[in-house]
Length: 245
Image (cartoon, rainbow, N blue to C red):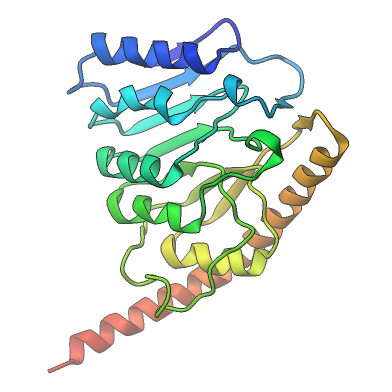
């Protein structure tokens, strides 16, 4: 199902639309949903007004569609999630058959704070969505976990299907650690997609976005190396298990 709107929608109008879908669409049959609000032909303008962003309460009515394999929502004003851990857990455990989940784009949350979604917030997708190949979600990549299997469940939950991660303008500071961390839970990951050509309302935000793009470009260069190492580690671990008496 492809839905295009004629204007930029507010949080309330997105919620009203998804409630209507919940009431009138067959919960057992809907497998694809693509939504676009009224995009301008000019550059994307980054906003900080949460009343204009899609929040989790707006998305909740979609959780009844358990067979969704492709969910792609483009909201001009972006997304804002106040409780991302609950949101991600519910989405991942509900949409277990999802192959592409793309919520684009999540600009900075109100007051310029980065997304509340962290690396740990990505684990439910690795744990519960084995078919997921493309994930689009902005998150805070400024404090990646150190690669330590005693402190982080690298070998417990990982997804070998995911190849594209659309990070949009996710903040990033340490590309090397980011590449190492993401290759641990998504060993087949090949590329990051950022926001290209977006314009912020203030110069300082513009500089932050450009720095973010440079950071993700560097992380992508390192990704293939780390992914190869992760594959070797898992292959060795499997061989060791096979020869145990």
